[in-house]
Amino acid sequence: MMAEDLEAQLVKDIHCKEIDLVNRDPKNINEDIVKVDFEDVIAEPVGTYSFDGVWKVSYTTFTVSKYWCYRLLSTLLGVPLALLWGFLFACISFCHIWAVVPCIKSYLIEIQCISHIYSLCIRTFCNPLFAALGQVCSSIKVVLRKEV
Image (cartoon, rainbow, N blue to C red; front, top):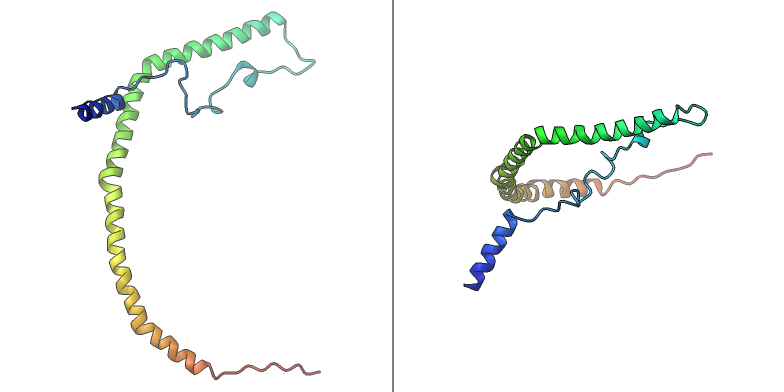
């Protein structure tokens, strides 16, 4: 009874695990890719400064528009794209589990049989031939003389 409860809890945990609403990139997948701040895009070198008010308003406009545009796009497209990506990765997993791995295992089993046959043919036909050629060529001597 206790083992069944533990197994049921493990299965439940796999499908219903808690998500972290604070750290939404725990594996740092997008560490360097999408961290773009105002200073990374717009910079005024010394001697070509705009008015301070323009700089502040530009900073605020950039930051707020980026924030709300992302929120709007993720609201409109986040769930459909999550569905699409979930479907795609489910198909990839399905193909990998039910087609790719069995094909590779089947190939390895068949190639092992063919490998034994190939090895037997090489030992039967090629080894005596090469041994005979080695015997024939073993009496050849090469002498190098340096003439002055």
